[in-house]
Length: 221
Image (cartoon, one colour):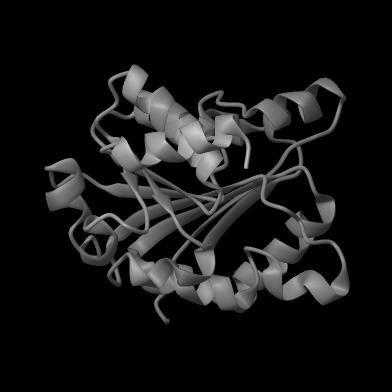
């Protein structure tokens, strides 16, 4: 482990906006994010596989009356997002270090208002399908976590993942599906309020189009 990573892991241990194994809140935060972490009753929005938390931070800046939680397993990435949020004085941004497979251990059913999935690994090989974050197994989890009519967003540069996701959200009975395969030349462009991650900017600069879909939790789980 490099010194830089060690330093970032130490930052996570000391940061009040990071929930990770070893901290008391790690086992008690489920159902208590609003009360214990944020101290308010505002809506909760997750960014899954948040990386350095660029979207989490951008959204938290744009919507101060909403609570945002970036979720990722990589501690060094979490540390970058955490420190950026602290330096900006964002009390409505927090980070959870965990594997997304275990996300239900940290949120009660209906505790979440929205979920963003921004540029996840498309897992393009057929044998990797079960690891795609829009696989029916994950979509079923999201439906349990989301409140009634809660919103799911996906942004990706992968046509394969985008087409796959359009199919799976329909199969899993998400409703009100809207989508575009060219976000920045679409009327849906306003939804993401101009936030671009580092890699999204690289994709955009190279001429790749950005795919986006939004849908709502249906009536069945």
